[in-house]
View 1: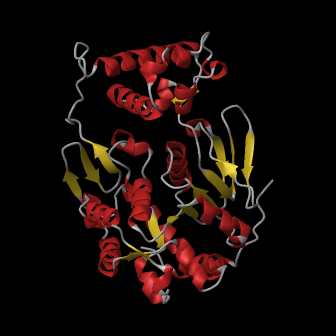
View 2: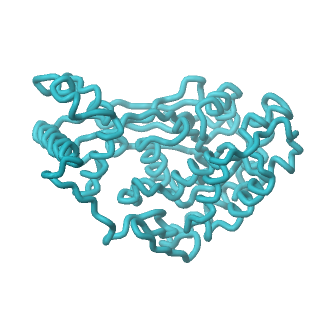
View 3: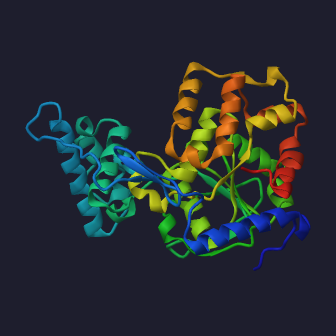
Amino acid sequence: MAFVPTGPEASFFDALDRHRASLLAVVKQGAGEAPARVTRVVSRFEDSVGLQMIPQCITRKIKSDSPKSVKKFALILKILSMIYKLVQSNTYATKRTWRLFTVSTLHFHRDIYYTDSQLFGNQAAVDNIIDDISCMLKVPRRSLHVLSTSKGLIAGNLRYMEEDGTRVQCTCSATATAVPSNIQGIRNLITDAKFLLIVEKDATFQRLLDDNFCSRMSPCIMVTGKGIPDLNTRLLVKKLWDTFHLPVFTLVDADPHGIEIMCIYKYGSMSMSFEAHSLTVPAIRWLGLLPSDIKRLNIPKDSLIPLTKHDHTKLDSILRRPYISCQPFWRKEMEMMADSKMKAEIQALTFLSSDYLSRVYLPNKLRFGGWI
């Protein structure tokens, strides 16, 4: 069944269509946004990919005969053993399963967690080891038969088939679809969407659904990673970009944390730089909330929040990153934030009206090219 267009007239999308044409031209040329490459100790920045681990990166040494690292060494061997069993039996586990160790998922004959609870410790330790193994073997987690647990949501003009044959049709209804745990396995993706909107926070995502933004701006796709995105949400955004080359925009708070999240989608992170090619979408644009919008819309000061010491540190850190040299408009916005010493959540727009975000702010941004 084909999607029935219910959104604005075709002329509304003129700016988006022109933007997409420019993106496609860049894709055909095989170029990035601007000529820039900076080499760091552990990673390098390439404008067409994002942060990448350099081949001669620092190795992590763990000794089997050292009291300080013997536990970690044992943990690496234990997880390698579990991965071997998963691969041999052609079964999969989620990263969360390493902590919970449910027998039904792992198809093991004993409850490993209770057997080795002191060895495994907390979830973060296990996650870091799996990342190290993936990096060491130079393969994605799925090749280790370890899948990340999804927390993201997707809504809008998209349908696809999961690896087991399940057909999924996303809608613009109040109930969004959970991002699949096996992104590599989905196929037959179909959409007529004009753009993809990444929403930082679940609360904002749900509010847009409640305001029928997705339906009124149809055809479109909305995604949220509910804050810092999980691996599967990033993989999904990347897959949608690779498959359809849609304009991709981010809607984040006008604060250092929101900018950090946007940078993760666009350029990646140091910890996942070894998988940059499958995770980053450098074509992403910042749609809002821009610090300049706060001044332009006369948002009152009592709707703003003072930057904390941590905020200033985070902002300074982002401004020093190599990819900011490719983004002069981003730099200008962040410097404006630093000078004002104030930040704003997306909800600050409710000062103008309860549905200003969905009925005025976002439609105008999309129609008139208000992104950077």
